[in-house]
Length: 267
View 1 (cartoon, helix red, strand yellow):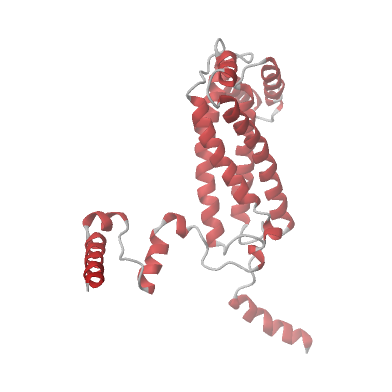
View 2: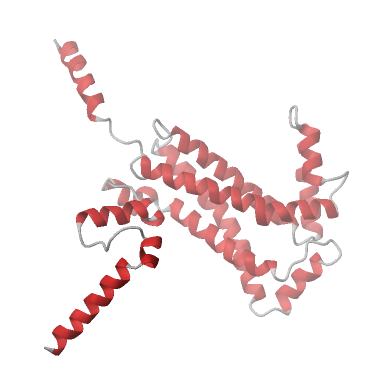
C-alpha cells in the first residue's frame, strides 16, 4: 500500500514536471513513452538528430573506418579545452610571449602537462584528418551524392593545417619566428593574390608584433569558429547521406530503370 502511494506520488510529480512550462519550453514534446514521442525526441534533439536513421552493418566495423573522423573530432574538443586553459596565461606580445611559455612550463600547476597535451593533440589531429581523408578516398565516399561533403572535408583539412601553422608562431622562439618567416615568404608567389595574402598574414614587411596578433586571433577565434561550423555541416551531411563509409547503394528507382535495360541487352 505504501509502495503504491509512493509510486503514485512519483508518477504525479513526473507528470507535473513533464507538463510544466519549463519542460515544454526546452523539449517541446512529451515523455518518450510512445513511438510518436520517441520520434519527436530524435527529431528535436540536435545531438540525436546527427545520427542517421539507418547505418550499414559494414560501416559499423572498426576495421572499416578506424574511427578516424571521431578521433579527429575528439582531438578538436581536446584542443579547445586545453587551448582555453592556455589563454589564461598567454599574452600575444612579442616582449612577453616567450616568457609566458617558460612560466607556463615551470611555474603554473599542470601547465607543462596541458601545453604538451595541446601540442601533441595538434600533431595527432593533422595525422588523423589525413588518414581519414585517405580512408574516405579509398572507399569511394567522395562519389555522388557525397561530393558536397567531400568538399566540406577538404575545407576542414585546410582549416586543420592553418590551425597548426598559426599556432606554431605563438611561442615566439627562434624556431617559430624563422619557420613562419619561411612559410609566409611563399605567399607572394601565389598567382594573382600573392602580395595581398602576404600583407594579410604578416601585417608588414617582416614577422613582427602585427604578425603575432594576427596569428593569435586566427588561431583562437577565426579558425576554430570556421572549423566548428564546417564540422556541423559535415556531420549533418553524413546523416542525410545515410551514414559513414562508402557510397550508398542505388535507389529502388535506379534499380527499376536499370533492370529493363539489362533484360533488353540480354535478349
